[in-house]
Image (tube, rainbow, N blue to C red):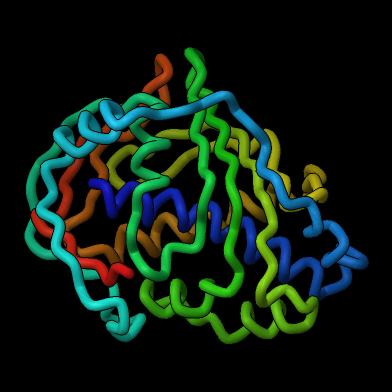
Length: 242
């Protein structure tokens, strides 16, 4: 679950970056690079301890193995087997999971995940654009256009902060959610762009369910300051580490 959680969350965050860059490339966001100069993510007030980290690991029970750091991107994260899992994760546990991925090509840092009692989630953090290409290759996503957008705006080595706010559920592999706010760097998405973001995120969720071996979601919901999950997870995860 550790790798699956981080892959799932990073796909959501990665989609925000894709949308921002595509819109910038098409002229919807003049001077996009200037919006990315902010260097600190929004503080959501969520911290975690080693106890949160250990608790999250005990709930996942996924066997972790390391691959050499120079493993080709396409082979740098691998999942084997399948098992049934039913567990609830607190926002501290999710934050611990999101910040302890030692995968070489994981492109996010300083992540905070906050879920309120009404099931509204907030996610903030930093995107490392120089890892985007290898990250996309590892997930079998075509990164060509995205890297051209990064080069166009001289963002290959940029580290923009991001912020997401919304709520949603997954039932029998179908994602349903609403986005309240998206922000990349200093740019807040207007309503029409949030609608496009929702469409892209649904597409990415389907991509995830189809491409992660052993992963399926019968039920996932943000409720009572927790992520409630029921589905299947891989028994083993191998990832390239530094």
